[in-house]
Amino acid sequence: MMVLLGKLIGAGLATIALAGAGVGIGLIFASLISGISRNPSVRRELFNMAILGFALTEAIGLFALMMALILLYAF
Image 1: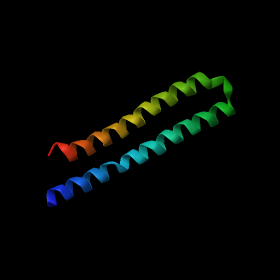
Image 2: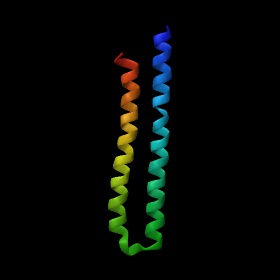
Image 3: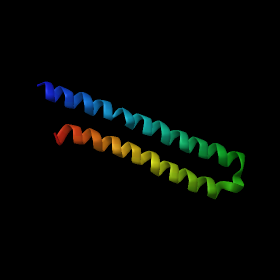
Image 4: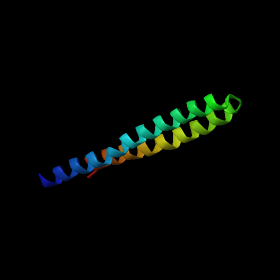
């Protein structure tokens, strides 16, 4: 019973990072819109950087989800 409780608490704590990834993605695209509205001539460069930032931020979220699932089902 205590092991199950520990798994559930650990998985819940691991999913907190998913909220952080969501906030990070929102900030990336908010900054992209702001940057393009300030200087439209650098749209392509800003978009490329935003997609790179999105991919890295999303990877952190996927790693957190993977850790939560590992905690629940692997041990």
